[in-house]
Image (cartoon, rainbow, N blue to C red; front, side):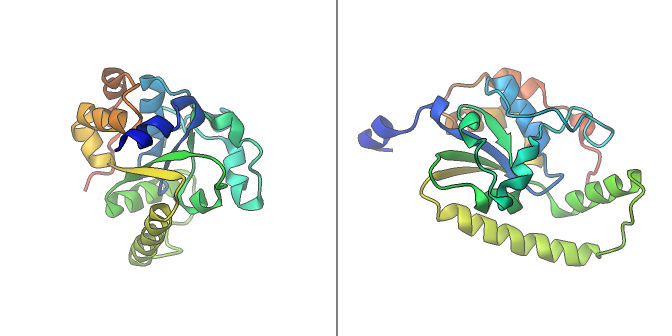
Length: 201
């Protein structure tokens, strides 16, 4: 990074930190890590913790209306973290600066976790085969990564859920470098709970 890049790099309180990924990829865990590190989450606490996410979902309901044009809340997200699923990233308006932490997790674990959630809710699990879903996810992720790469107002860091569970401090340090070395990395590492790793493959 050159001198001018550093000089004009947006300050932390001007940036929106976005945590994204496929559902069940570790986004809630990452939101909790950022909160522990010192970045307040933007959440309305409407969706409470349950057996699928005992530590909480860290969601902000209005995010789900991004594709309907509901973006008036974004100024409130400056200096905070907000969870946006991968399918909605493309609806983020271009007049804000974002740093995206994109969670990656083994596809077979995501599928197993989603299936377990459906079972607990009493919903059918055989509407789409695992093979079809895996193919769809792979295509979707390629499209999202291409989109992210082409956005001048977006910086992105890809983080492995699996590696985070194995080495939380190393992941916290990587995130800290990405976010201008302003986080408490040890506090971030402490909140990672390996006992929640229930869909191991």
